[in-house]
Image (tube, rainbow, N blue to C red; front, side):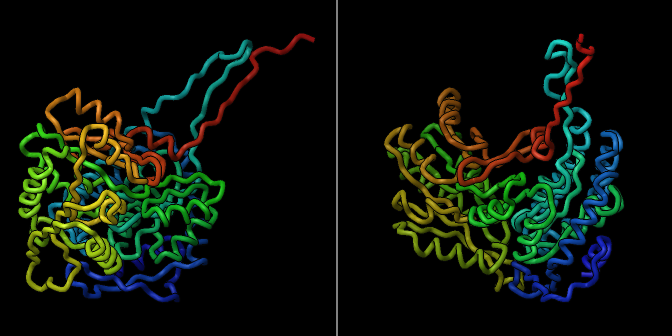
Length: 469
């Protein structure tokens, strides 16, 4: 917690006098510390500091801004072990998962350090007779970023890296259960980017509401649909970017590759299934249904909680997960084993699970379960499979599994989702955009397209010759 106090001091705060939030280790269920909840004065101070830092940061030419972002990426790499330890403390993830995610975070900052120097502009030139026109892409200003607990550091990077590269300053609010790694990022950002260019504002949900209602110019939010609706209402006419979760279908045809079931089991249990884009609903043709259930159940049985993936993040999520499982009308409910490490028997561990023989409107189908669980549904034909895939409000991600390329591409075209994989799932890179539709929100994360998420165009037109009198 000493690092957290140092960060608060960096942004001109004194120790908070409001109630602290207890931090719980999801592996054991035990209290591991506390974090102060920022309130109105702290939020106002942070946003004012970001506002004061904005002219200097946006005034840097792309080359200089790029160099500072490269320095931040280098600091992340230099301190990768500490970032990983902080991520594990808040999420309970295995070391292999956190190490890979920290590496991706450094890569994201490096990507946007380069991307900001290679932006292409809209049409410019003599578009009106006697006039010269051009378009300037300008930063929005101060961006309030609210990130979730499932990927504390990586989701922050998805939002902060393009916002900073575009010339904005950022005040980021981590989830109340996982402030650790974002606090360290803010410390390193102060060294690499300058004071108050990127700040963190730990606290609870009220802290997030205060940040959204503060004098920020834009809000970038990643979280639940209900919370996203609240953010949209509070943000008013200001720009917002919302990533509100998913309920990804995986259409598996009879000629799917042999490793399909193992790949789906791996993707659905990565981060204990607490990924918005994780496969959640397996849809197959009726003649292939029994094979699908058997193969998927066998593959999920190989994925052990405590060995291959971590626990759920917090008591509320564990309770919600249990409610969806117990309320399901599935006639087949098969769970794998839990193999927690010694001393971790009281944490929020849940096994890999398959639910089959359930109605299409089952709670485990229509709601985002957000856990290590897959449902299995059958369809009479491809049209019916697409109807099931598109039959929920969320439209973030999906996958299609078949060795028939033309059929696979046709199904990918017909699925309503922002990202569709063919014979793979959760394969992402900084160069490719990620974003939702429908109840999954709107906006773009990653790729050069995300830069425009945090910029606004200004058209400038100059008359070249004086009018004759």
